[in-house]
Length: 294
Image (cartoon, rainbow, N blue to C red; front, side, top):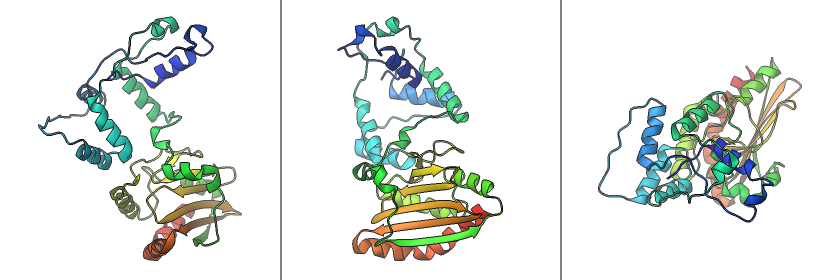
């Protein structure tokens, strides 16, 4: 493969704009090095100062490898399967003069990794592959999910007074990822593991930033539909595997924090699911609300 730094990709895309020489032409773009997957993995380990050993096995099972990658990383099974299957395909660029014409300095693989992690540490990541919408949301349309339904739905609504609304908002904006869910995070972890077993996204996606949330962001197994700090409101939509649809909303009005969980069941299984998890809602949602408000 010929890995290329994202910033080099941006330079190519920007450079060809309104450049007549490039009209009606296609160009392969890639980094300055041709590397195997083994070399890329070891290069990554070296850059992160990790000790790693790769053992070659005589039997290759793409499907088994895909499942393993899916369970130990935050990738979807489709992406894991495509990555594994792509290992037998050489992706080498056809030679062209575009790099010289645009005056682009190609970054090495090691440089690309260091710059990428610099962005992560500075919380300067604008977007992530984790933010790709699930097929469920793509089918429905994210705008249609903004209006949370009430008819034919189960609703768990709780409220708690907050002494400091600004601190409470900051807690809401830090929820998920490495912060966790403020109460019984291990149960959220179990739910994420169960979701993984059923082919869902699980909790490993985490979040793009530890302090910032924007509409469209992935947040563990939720999708951010609406986020406004000035309005003190955050609306999430569940992307986990469910026999129905679920929303979770946080909103602060007049020093009162409102937490609303809405579930629209799909048939009998959806109703049975709601009643089966209802006992857990009592202490999980209550505990989370209390911790955020305190």
